[in-house]
Image (cartoon, rainbow, N blue to C red):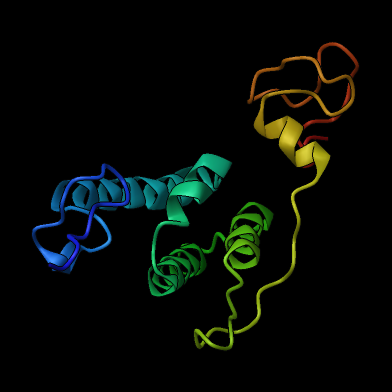
Length: 150
């Protein structure tokens, strides 16, 4: 007798092999998480480590589609700035994606710096104290937080 295939997420027997390696419920839950991750990337221009772990459950084709969709949206909106490039590079590096394989021109390599990480966490890169996101200068050490501020 053939062994029944079980869901990798919850362990239930998979009744519909179309959803393999997940049962229908877990497959739907993962698809919802995927959509939420896409929205977070587009809205907040960030990709958390926990979101990367979720994305690792998906096929390479799904990740390539996500990359192309996000790249197109950033480019169409004129938002292919450093923040956008950091997210795209993180996706590309984590999942070993190739722009040429996806039919895209190479993107500029931009890595997240310590300063970027601190600012993202509402901390001053100068003194590492908590600050408000909309500050131009750090009230504690005078560090210039907004590069456009004169």
